[in-house]
Image 1 (cartoon, rainbow, N blue to C red):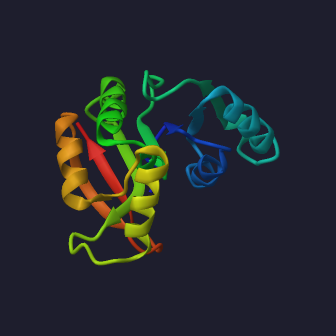
Image 2: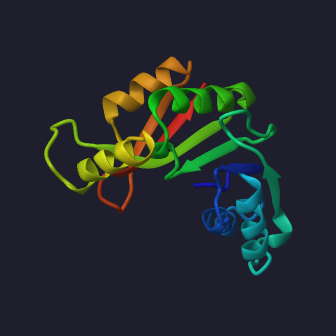
Length: 171
């Protein structure tokens, strides 16, 4: 339920499609797509065609360096698997710097089975590691990294996609 938020910031927000879906539900919220400059240009074009265009802003940057302030909800969707643990920890700590006690960070990511059974996500994990030193993570790995960033998991919500979860993180 996104209606509780006033300012939703989609970190690594890509073309803005996910944020536009969220803002369509959260009719009183404004949103910001945060991403690298070439990506933001595409997001501007895409969101200009939507019903939420008047409530959506854009911010250029790299979440490995910093993230925008003033969000009461930060979203990272399908992006953290591109990063190794060290870089992911930097990202989480950068978000933490901007969080207030009431702020939520929603991580929409894959969570591997602890059983190490071969499946498409395990194959994706190997592919990500070989291609860009990224990885999919188990619940235990998510918990450890989030704790190392001095954050805590408030809730883990399965989605309709297999192995995909929303991890609700707070201070």
